[in-house]
Image (cartoon, rainbow, N blue to C red; front, side, top):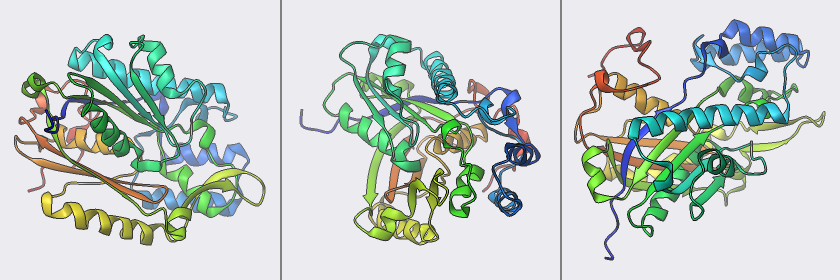
Length: 345
């Protein structure tokens, strides 16, 4: 009875927006110019960041950022959150066949958009989840919150027998578009795009035979006691009283320190396969590996993410079966997977 419960990942889903929300570099720069918020120097800086970011022309943004003028209202932000959350949860439920009434744990994370009622309450209301559900909304925890949510769900599954945990990871762009000219704050405009992931975990022993992965390790490293780490990703007002998220020049150094602490502890246990740009992007990366046919039974995959605070968090999964791309439903990469590089030995 005291033995830790095994946690399995039945399946996960990644939201793929409508093609009308695709935003090329040219469109991004045009919208930025039409907004009238930025100086010529700021526009040139954003273009440089976009060119160096590695993003192609097939990324997506919220509808509010494609309108003229930009529609950066609270109501639009709520609509954006509902669209990506409900869209990705619908897809996940269809994949797994799990009934809403059987979900006993819900964890939703979004760093900067935290409305009242909460994002988790919005999900409970939409899907009429049961009254005794353990629901949580995590805010202000940065890009690493997606893995913090997995760790929280794992801890809850240790004390809730025969349970399903639904984890939803997202960010919202609408209210967090920076309209000033502070360079450290302009970077976030260039780096964040639309997306969301939904993950269904189970501690039911018989679910092992229909799950994709087993959760092997979680590890959280927090460097917030150090002032430089604490301040390297910081939401504040600029000199013009415009709110934005500032990324310090110390960010890479602090990320390296957090990564060193995390890997020093976890490194001997696993062999990595990792990356991160926002809280849900880790799941798009895993979906990419599945679409390329790179996940074989017994493989271990290391997800690692960084976030404000400053934090570095890791999750390790073991594949319970070989993933056949031809049998994957609604993988967001499948329509264009052949356009990307082939198998890497």
